Structure formats: C-alpha cells, structure tokens
Image 1 (tube, helix red, strand yellow):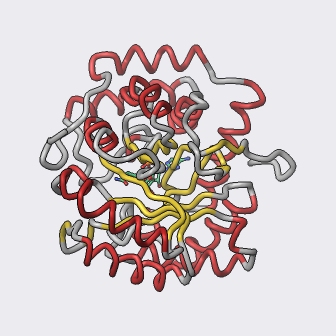
Image 2: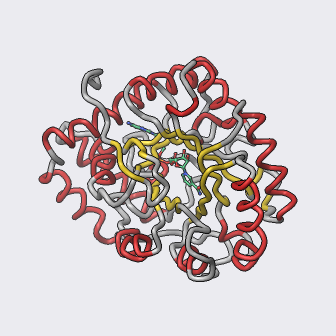
Image 3: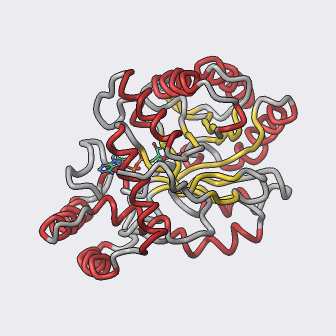
Length: 323
Ligand code: NAD
C-alpha cells in the first residue's frame, strides 16, 4: 500500500504553469466503460487518489454518456477542498450520439459539462478524438470557439486528443503558437507501443504540454485482460496476454511494470490511468513511488519487451485517418 508520507512527483505541463501529479486519474471507468462502478466506490477512489497526491482528473461527456462527468463532479465536491488544489480536464466534440465539432455545439457542450461537473471552470478543455472530424474544421472553427471559451474564463487551457499521431502535427502546423496548450495521446507510450517518443522533440519545440493516457493499453497490459470492445488485433491481444502470464509466473504484476514504464520519460507531464477502485488507485500510486525509490525491474521489462517485439508499435485504425 502507498505510504501517506511520500508524495507523487509533480511535473510541469508545457507552458501552462500547471504542475500535474505524474500519475493522473482517468475517469472513463467512472462512466462504467470498464465494468460497473458504484457511486460509493467512485467517490472513495477519487478521495483516495487526492489523498495520495493525485491532483489531475480527466473526463469527457462521451464516457458513459455523461455518467463519468457526473460521478467525477460529485466526487470532487465531496473532497471539500479549495478548487485550485485540483486540475480538471474534460472534452468536447465526441458524444454518445456521435461527433460534432461545430462552434455552436462545443460552446453548448462546455456549459453542459460545467453543470454536470458542478464547476465554474475546467482547467483544460480538449477537442475529443479529432481524427473522427475534419481536421480543417478543428483548425478553422473548433479551436477559435474554444479560444472564446478560454477568454470567457470557462476553460483555462485548450487541448486536442486522438489516436493517430499525425493529427497533432497536422493541427499544430496550422495554428498560431499558443492556440493549443496541450495534447493528449493514448496507447502510444506503453510497453507495447512507444511511438509517442519520436514526436516529443516536435511537441516541445511548439511549447505544447504532453499528457500520455492509457499506460495499460486500455486493459491489454493487465492480468484480467482488455474489455470486449478493445480494438486491438487478436495477435496483439495474445502477445499482451503472454506477457502478463510471463510476469505472473515470476510473481510480478504486468500492470505495475506497465505503469512504471510509462512514467520513465519525464518530458511527459502526466500518465493518465483509468481507475475504478481504491485498490487500483493505491497500486498505481505505489508503483510510481517505488519507481522513484528503486527504479524499474529491468530483468522483467526485457523479458516482456522480448515477448512484445513482434507486435511493437502495432496500433489499430481510428477515425478518418487524415493527417
Ligand atoms: P488504461 O490503460 O489506463 O487502462 C484502464 C483499465 O485498467 C481499466 O480497466 C482499469 O480498471 C484497469 N486498471 C487500472 N489500474 C489497474 C491496476 N493497478 N491493476 C489492474 N488493472 C488496472 O486505459 P484508459 O482508462 O482508457 O486510459 C486512461 C484515461 O485516459 C481514461 O480514463 C481517459 O481519462 C483518458 N483517455 C483519453 C482518451 C482520449 O481522449 N481519446 C483515450 C484514452 C484514454
């Protein structure tokens, strides 16, 4: 169990001035995306996360068809701490009903999210999974609308998220500096896929903060395996399962190794992991503290990397594949 005396490392998020805990709380599981979670467990998980030094919480209206935002809102309120002690990001443009990156929709979306989160402002508003929209609309219409929300004090910083890494360069090459403060990339900086690494110098040159989500590859790098809807190929799923079994045989846990691997690169401000129980919060914080104290288990990491070599950097199609 994580010690209450050691604190999680804080890392700067690009030029925002925000200092995020290196482990961030991904709230998609609070929308029952990875199996059902009771309100009590959701509130207790957020409370334990905050107690152990996690100060960054990420959600979206898409997760559980708005359920994640509502649960996170309740849980943050229940903390009863000043608003500036935690950082919240939510998203716009992706909904249970489909995608809509129009200016009107994202402006309305912000108001709806703030109501569900019971907040006056969010720290970061992301355009959610932009590869499913038109990237030119993101540049010419969505981001200017988000700029208005920023000027009105509804969000402090603006981000873009998605799977194919080319979307980030497409957008960042077409907007004035300071338009996009952060990017959120997922499933590209975990043991089976480290393709985000190559983009880091470019992102730094643009002054953009980096959030790395899904260190467990959305469940691939766990003993219990991914959810039914996971888009990975059978080959990738089998390789990850073999890696998990190898760890288990050695008395090790693949999720701990995966968390630690994702935390190694300090150019990444925070590693967002989806958590749905107090136990998972404690395990993931403990993994980070142990990494700081004694480093990663290099022997097990090389065995796992050898098993995953044939599928290294294998991803899956997402969106319109532009950019
Ligand atoms: P993840 O890789 O963090 O895996 C989450 C899964 O691992 C869940 O089933 C969770 O219950 C389980 N888990 C967590 N800790 C564990 C532990 N110690 N042992 C065993 N299992 C454990 O994937 P994710 O949740 O999709 O990603 C993290 C967060 O990043 C999301 O919740 C979301 O906030 C954000 N995210 C955003 C985007 C986007 O914007 N497009 C995409 C993916 C993720």
